[in-house]
Length: 154
Image (cartoon, rainbow, N blue to C red; front, side, top):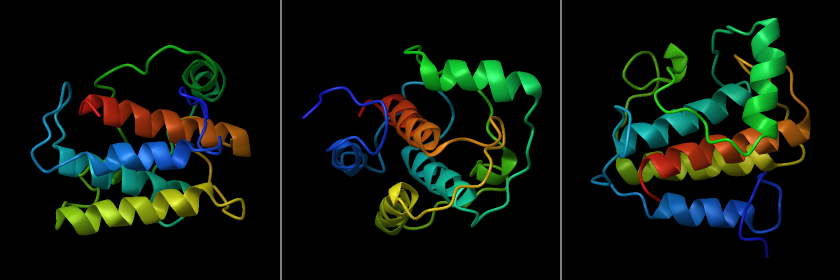
């Protein structure tokens, strides 16, 4: 089993990510940014809802974001920058889902992650990166989850 993952459909990756999600508690402290651990869970859930077409998110993609930024975010080992603003529709402090009950919100994230990786899932264009291949979606899914789990030290 690999110890370093790059995309969610690698054997064992979803289980490894979910084990990290399980270690998040309502009191887990952030290492950067402004979200609480609970807000991070609903942000990730909303992001999966958006990719699955369950939540409308405004697009801000440009030729630069669809090419250079997408390549850098998905094809290099560079860590994603900290503090980059997200779209308001997936920001729990703005128009995103508000945290309610921690365990229920975590369960919703787990369900959405499993729907996202299902080979039958249809993914909508990304608001920054535009249309993406299945492999690019699986890389994005892993890198987005990893970025926020590292934000909380898990």
